[in-house]
Length: 404
Image (cartoon, rainbow, N blue to C red):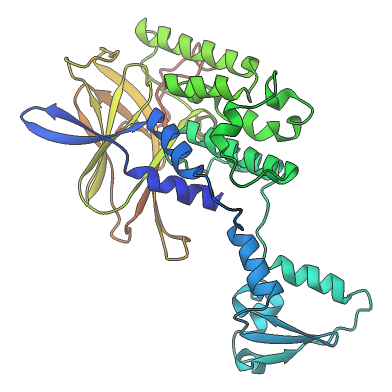
């Protein structure tokens, strides 16, 4: 997932849409789902003139099999293994050996005695070689990642679908030994299956991660809907309930039956919320929206060097459907992440779940930024804009969160 996320992170410099607010021109960076799809198709599927090794394959072949750049020789079972400390230190045994005041920490050649007769040259080759190879994301692990409440989604839910699409393509390419020159968009546009792939015998083993997607948030843009039906991966009956749910939400908002969720537990919020995010490359004032249908609410995010804020933008000259009611309640949770040079989390700032009463053209501060945060800054936002249908008929007069 790290490789996928790093590629998607660069999508933060998408098309900028100019709008007027009063007499001052502001730049609002629209996160357009159609642009996301086009970007992914364009950047991840560039045809190659020759078959290339992946990074993991190159590392395994060059460093392990060909022993290039070795900085440590390990003598085991009468064989000299020319290895690399940075890789074999993934093993707690070698990590301990190379740290502290151990004699081996500064030696170029070390000897390891093996007394277990079950350990052979072949088994050692497999174990040591595994330290130089990539790990595969199984369907079970991918399902766990997709459903995790701690998943940081760059862009929107549809980008998770696009990553699963890429993950599926990688598995099928390995299975059928497709050429690297085959582009993912061509593969799915010219697919041969006549029924939804995930319902076929071949596709059933990959179905669970796709089924874990929050289907209703895949339907927020016309272009996304076209891609879903063109790919023909997800069976229509998985989406029917999502269409009905979204339509009922719209009717409830329009009929003055729903002005946003008043009461949800943390667990309910984590399962129901709209997941989105972005990467801010450098400090300054950044104003953006995620261009997706939000029941007539135009929500603008503003980030500067001191704070993060949200505004319910309500322009009379807007050409989009508008929710005209004076106040709308939302639940929102924001996490800000800074990473170190190894792309490990360096600092996290969490707003926790907040309830905001959004009035037209009114801005609310979500958090004041910690001084420990640095750029690029990853912004993860979870929002709930409507009352879940399972809670819609319950008493929503009691608040469990303080108003902000």
